[in-house]
Length: 320
Picture 1 (cartoon, rainbow, N blue to C red):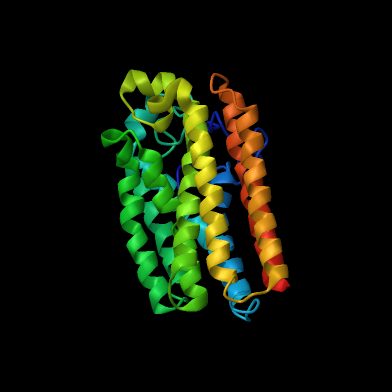
Picture 2 (cartoon, rainbow, N blue to C red):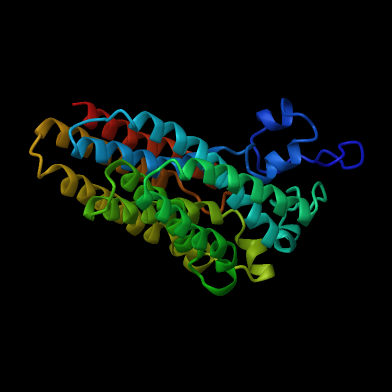
């Protein structure tokens, strides 16, 4: 760990004020926890929520929660924290020169000098190994899917350099848990998890385009690509399309999973969750002002609540 007497304790500009890392974590651990975005937990939620969708919908389709589902929920929560941390550390390692040129990110641990690249790489490896210990408690199909996801995690930080659609790569990586946890529950895949995965990708395009509008001016100066820059003032129209796609694919996933069983209460509860999820996204779109970075950050963070609405109703469907 770094010597807190030699390296200044620099808080991250866009972290919530008074977060537990800045206030309660030991000083020597703070740079590493900031690398993992532990001071900004919404990303962990956004990685975890598609996993929860998959567990709940798979349970509803198979007649209710099974004994191992509690372990799946708890383990994927810990795994989401670890893999989000490892992915963010890797992202900051590859982007450290870009982050140094952007006002919002130059206070992150690498560009601010709180940790060295070698220390960051070691931290990414430690987190990945801990997550692997959880992954190897699952079945063979889930383990294979988990290993395959590493390619997406490795590629994502470079996407902004070669495509205007890096949010697609983020969506592919961040929603992989919908496939992995469905397989961990059921032992295989099918149309419902694939449709749930597509819903998550469209949702990621929605929320991360909003997030990217915080940095459009700096990104333009340094040549970083994003859907926010690509769409510009036409972003609300594109966001409406992503919203519609996310809701439609989630509804199709529910129908594909639950219509064969014929339980109308389960189906009604699950579709109510889809509707609640969609209404929250509509609420965000109506409040959006892409010229206001603070508003964009607030709306981005609110997507935890949007995803949890769907997760809670899907869980209720599994219990019905």
